[in-house]
Image 1 (cartoon, helix red, strand yellow):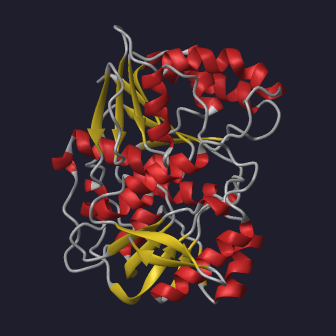
Image 2: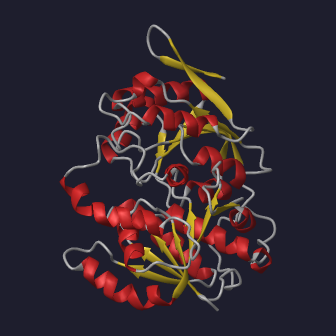
Image 3: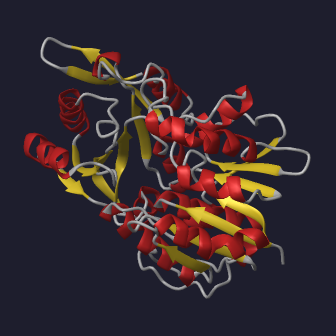
Length: 377
């Protein structure tokens, strides 16, 4: 069997590699246990793992991501995958040690699967070893920007990056980024596949394969539904896109309008911001230990799930298909953006909300004398 190597740096990336593997051989997954929510992380007996695929976790440093990744890695092992945990950022010498450890695997890999084409680590690895086949799986909305920039022939820059991107660090890494841009593009000798649940136009020479979250639906659920609604948090404050005061006010208004009682925090949200939200809104803060798609599918989950523009407005309708859960997306008002936010931020976020599935309700902010309130669009 041809060697296949997957590099993941986040829990969502690992989930989507499992979804990709399941799509290659959907009949291999055992039927879910009868009669339940599927909440237990029960071993699957190894039936879903393609031969020759090795999952390499390039471990991040923040504790929330590491915790979720360890849980996802155990799920993968339960399904029979070979998972290699690499402390790729563990102090001085970690980069050299990682390259030394992974070189034999990279040289043998015909296909490489990555979840974040903007990752400097992944870009460096691809610069050193170019695979014959490349698959990009979702890691948030970055897939949409990757496909658009690839189609336009632009250098790869995250949509929320401010300024020219030509600071000292960027100048040092510019040769790596330029080389990686070529290695992440299709050629006569390299096939590129984008495996995504997002609305992506195939760049010239690429193949786009739909991620329907079939593995998630087969493994977990259906969930028990609660009477109320749930809110999904975002790290747009932490990435410098949205003003913290505006965001907290918007969360309070959404909770009041929809009778929400729980707030599912993004793994990158700061403890200080979440404490403020809990105090000012009365919402129960939930720190998920797995990606939200799995948490929602296992349940319990609200009959309505309200989110700001993010990947979940595309993924949750797929993961929760047939359960009766309604998903709503709240648009980002221009006045919520920070003065130094990227000029592309408003258009990109509007595009994420505007391209959500047809069954997703859209909420628009309308100004009142005291606060922004929300109505269905």
